[in-house]
Image 1 (tube, rainbow, N blue to C red):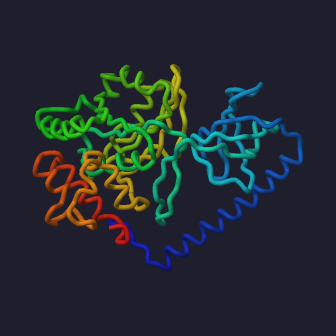
Image 2 (cartoon, helix red, strand yellow):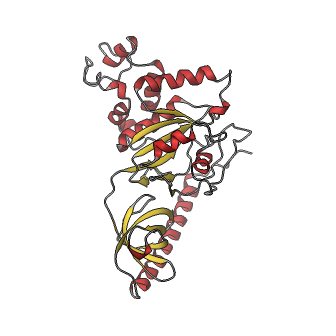
Image 3 (cartoon, rainbow, N blue to C red):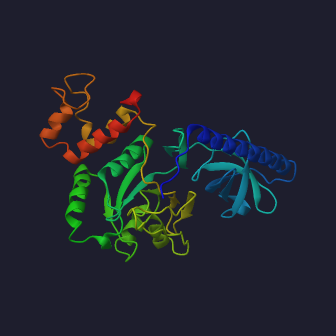
Length: 343
């Protein structure tokens, strides 16, 4: 059955109800914080946000007698929105409850637009974005390129990871090899693993140790299965592919941080089928295509759209093999999806 479409008034009404509920929750939270701060709170200390639940977060103590323990914490009203991976200053209270009093500076942040187009951080202090794809659901260069642009825009190193390598067969091998060859030629780090039979998982674990990583990729590519394989006992729920669409079903509902035994952390974030790039400009997109860098600024016309213009350096690069047709098609598709002001 087709989904019922909401008209503008219905959407506005739902949005208004949600805002009112959020305001009431914030008021209750403010009273709770006042009550806690009016009681006996421990000294200020540093902590790590390992999960986020509405107006509360889970904080892992990083020092002192509480080191390693996890506390459900309230936030002071003057604090910005916190995300998994944030480092904070907090004070412990009674019964495992604490209060966050300050946010420490972020080294990096991964953002995406929400349903209203507002930019929303989803993870902080990440230094490795693991872009996960698989033979099924069929990988698309355009989606991979969107993640690479997001990584470049955030200043975070990307790692391309082909999961479910056990599903490679005679029918999809040629297409996959052609897809991967493009990224190998560009110098992107790329690994092939199988969370199902364990192939390549030791090498992946070694690559992740010492980093704060986040897995991204469309639903159904096996991100939760990878977490279960890398961190036995975590038991992240695993979703199956939809028989009707061949696309994945969402399993993870909130970003959560896990520690690797050998050092380093993994932030498991909710799966999304398409990473919106409404927050980036045309120049940001161009910066995300690393093979363009030596060619940009050498077109005959300053406002060249790299479409049919004479003297276009990118079109010349395409003819001479410096730019692969797959990547040029992906670039054009992404540019055409940007807001008109940025086109």
